[in-house]
Image 1 (cartoon, rainbow, N blue to C red):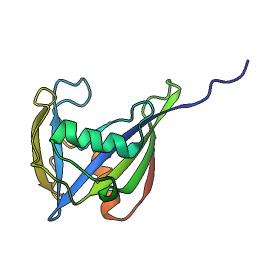
Image 2: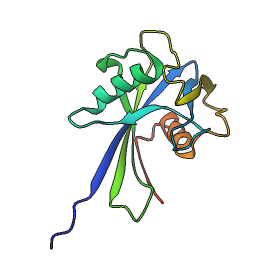
Image 3: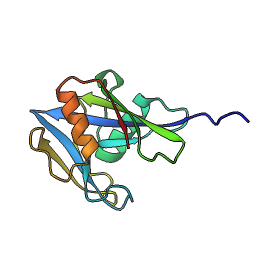
Image 4: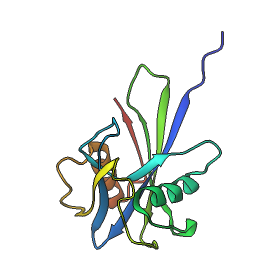
Length: 148
């Protein structure tokens, strides 16, 4: 019997930079890392590109519009969080410095704070792999792996 092929779950994350600050949101009522900060993000849907997903998530979570040409891939992370499941995650992190619209918490049922934080003083309750990626982006490290 042939081995089952590996399944990769794609997701994208948005890093907004402005004056050495980045925008983070605090999760609530999601069942994953509630009470902790992370980036605007989402899973890539079937027949959707990473770019299309990121544009959709920026609108859905923060009420902002982003042009495809303003999205720059700055980091890719390959990770597996559970050694018993037959899947991995492939996370693509986009940096954008230009957008239209006012940043607004569009999903208050899933987010109870949407704030700018200094890159050198992130909240203690920032999800660790997000802290790591922001540090890697700051140090021009394009790729990382995380297996635990």
